[in-house]
Image (tube, rainbow, N blue to C red; front, side, top):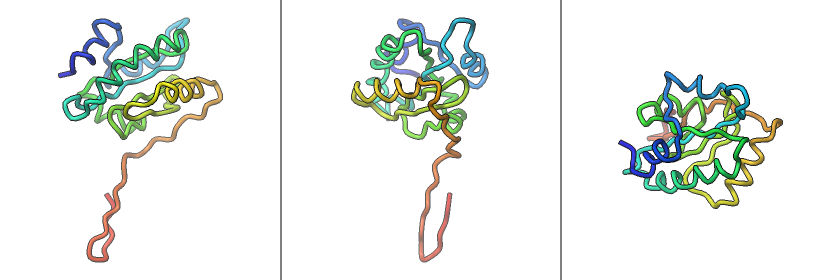
Length: 149
């Protein structure tokens, strides 16, 4: 269940909530829409209270980059299945894409100037896309034996 502020992104800001069934359709821009998107991976707002802070910032970012960026919230049930594809390791995260390719990820809450600077750079047509993360790797050494998960 999303928090009030995350729910308000749908009801007041009009942002779609996307999952595995409709993410491709969202990422493909319609005629006249920008090819760049910003996807909000919230994580559990009860465990990650910063998600509400990011929920307040997201509509402001969309206003700042109006006409250059479309936004959506990743449905909580779909986050686990989509986070590897979009390099969202830390929750909450904002992922900027060019069509279906991630070009940048900002985890947790940041200074406004950092959002503007980094997102502005990622919106450049020559910004490189990110390679898939493959998920986090943890290396544990116990009794001289190395275990990689």
